[in-house]
Amino acid sequence: MKIIHTSDWHLGARLHEEDRAPEHDVFLDWLLDLLSAEKPDALVVAGDVFDVKAPSSAAQKQYYGFLAKAVKGGCCGRIVVAAGNHDSAAFLAAPSSLLDGLGVSVVSGGGADSGDGGTVVVPGKSGVPALAVAAMPFMYDAELANCGAAAAGEGSSREVRIAAGWRLRCAAAISAARAGARGAPVVAAAHCTLAGAELSDAVSERSRGVIGGIGAFDPAPLAAADYVALGHLHKPQPVKGFKDTMFYSGSPLKMGFAETRCAKSVNIVECGAPGEKPSVRMAPVPPGVPLADLSGTPGAVDAELAALVLASAPRVFARISIDGFDGPSRPHWERFRSTAAGAGIRILEERDVRPASGASGLAELARRGVDSVSPRELAERKLRASSAHYGEEQMAELMRMFDAVAAQAAEEAAP
Image (cartoon, rainbow, N blue to C red; front, side, top):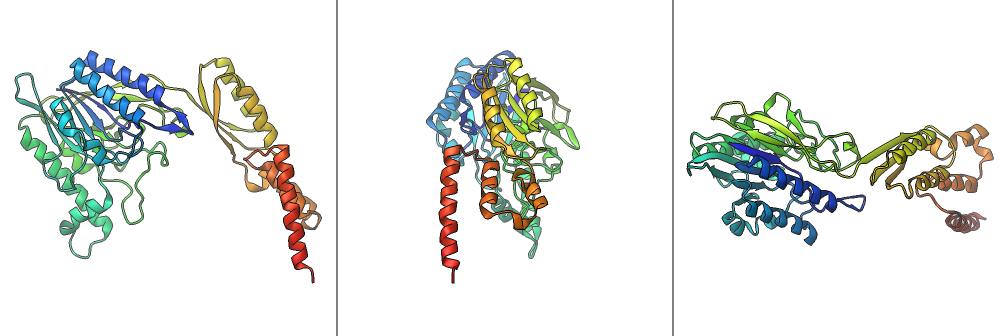
């Protein structure tokens, strides 16, 4: 039995207000072509179909348009979608009765002890069950703690109860899948963070907190499945200690500048009899808009920007971080923007990462001595070094406001 494993589409996502819909269109069209070429028995989407719980109409159109084309084309036996933490379980499940009749199974929740509610049986050509998918949507700490309370014992910590709930949930889901398709391989589709996995960006992946919870789950309870299709982390990778059977497919798009050098892919998995090691191939996803993370002194950034211009990419999203110099940053930002203008380079993030003393010129002021520095001079230096890049008119207005406040303070302090 063959499956294609993907996750973390994040339809509707934006990068600093840049719409990613065109990149998602390219990915979904490519995925349809891959399904047509590989003709898998199932497509497994391991969570985070959408970027937000109330997706835009455009994002919904992309999702349902893809499902319609996949079903009409008859390019895979079954589509299984598990909800992620970015998805609204209720929203994703709303059309499930209709979708199920079209060969699309949506598993959105049901509690940590939901029995076989997440089992999707995929029949073979003869109609006999040939594959079982144990779909495990994202599970919240409170849900798992309640599930594991009895097993953990009275007086156990919340962390212990959560870990016990996780073990029980994995065992119940995989056992139900085994029972639902005896003699067939079992694929567990889980949206979670596993211990030993590598985060590419803790901000965009919204990893679980460790205060009153746990940072990552033990992968061992999932080992009872023949293949584990994981979602939630955006970097494609096997799980340490289970490199033959547990994989994050990763997100098809680079979700942030921390993923600039991360190649994207989906997994093509062929399962044999239960207990046999699956065959896993990684199919590279067509690259979206290139991300460029430029950093260093202003001179170094100038050189990197010039190289990007020479590369003649039709479009590039860039983040620039400057360091290693003294004085105001505003002239450098103006020069960078001028270089990028007309070259297809969109500077989405500008960061002055110097320590405060360097960024505001305080090193020079310290050498002069505190007594020689007026409050007005200090305020003006700070404003000129600000990442807000105030223009001269704004600077003049801000300094007039400073002078008015300073005059009022002096008047109130007078005896």
